[in-house]
Length: 120
Image (cartoon, rainbow, N blue to C red):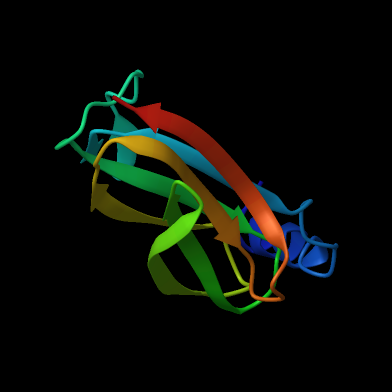
């Protein structure tokens, strides 16, 4: 296949619909090479953990990470994303004892992912 044939075949696929929407939420104690690591539970009070999200196909705008402890919002982070590719982003928080929840909301306000865990 010549270079021109390759480019022409690539353009033929440009009009196809994008892949299905993606939204993940993973926890970790560190970020290495843009990926969370050391996410084994349980978490202890005083530890700093990262909430890592991968988002694609939900539109351009802002996604939100909302952190709560015992039902009370303790942190809200807004991160810009586009509609043209897969986006990875993360937030971090130092934990205290209690029941924690992290939710990821898309540009349209829908909840995309969530997790809960108890800190001892």
